[in-house]
Length: 186
Image 1 (cartoon, rainbow, N blue to C red):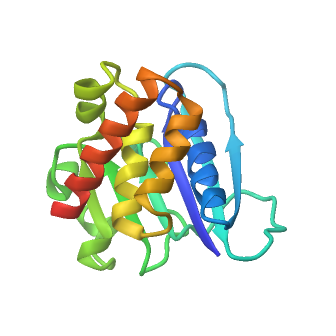
Image 2: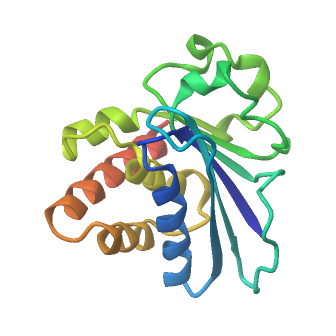
């Protein structure tokens, strides 16, 4: 089973990201589960969601405590909560930023991970460029497909199109494709 924990803030599409990721997995005939977790449910408050992907039926219902991948939609959360809790030494970390690991001050937190498992992708910038809104969730799913291979990009694009039909979906797919390319070039 491949488990993903997505951290962000209210209004960034954290819950929608887990939902779209689970749909992408379903499109590949995999079993998937998206689980939201809410705190104060207000714009800007820390939010976390989870997604599990497996070739077999998933019976777990609890939060993902030992993720195989972390998606950090807002790097200011590094100073608010322990986003790295439970991540294995072979896990993946995808961070929405144009800054480096050193500039973020998290070198020590990720030093045990394989170098190609930690990527910084400017997903908000890509969303602004393509969608005209600072919502990085769809773009980060494109990058996640590139970094982990847990789902194919084509499945991510279809899932985004189902969630956001029409021109909004097309713009989000373009942002996801740009993030996929950015993650592959790192």
